[in-house]
Length: 107
Image 1 (spheres, rainbow, N blue to C red):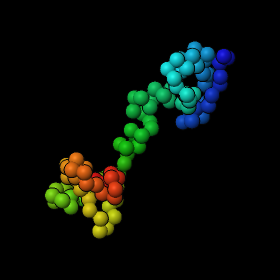
Image 2 (cartoon, rainbow, N blue to C red):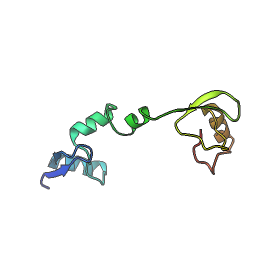
Image 3 (cartoon, rainbow, N blue to C red):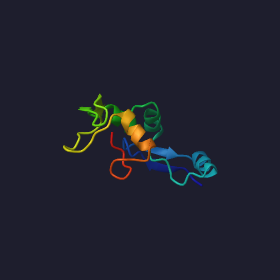
Image 4 (cartoon, rainbow, N blue to C red):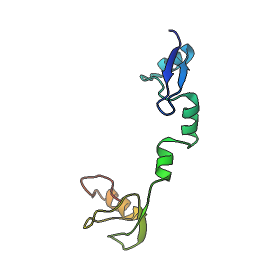
C-alpha cells in the first residue's frame, strides 16, 4: 500500500500518511484515516486546540441554584422560568433517577 497525501482539517497543510502508519491503523482496527497532521494532533493532545480550549474559553453565567439556593456558575445562559441546579444538586437529582428534560444535562 503506497504512502498517501492527506490534508489536515485544522490547518489545511498536506501531510504524508505513510505505509507504516496505514499498517499501524489497520492492526489496531481503526477504520478512518487521520484527519489532522502530526503537529495539530500533538497540539490537540497538549491542550492547544479542539474541545478543551473551546471549553476553557466558554462564557460562564452566575446563577443561584433553584434547589439549594447556593451561588454557582453554569456554562450557558439560563432560560427564564426554568430551574437551574448547582453541580451538587444536579448530581443528586441525576443519581435519584430524576432529570431535567428527559435526562439531558442541565446544571
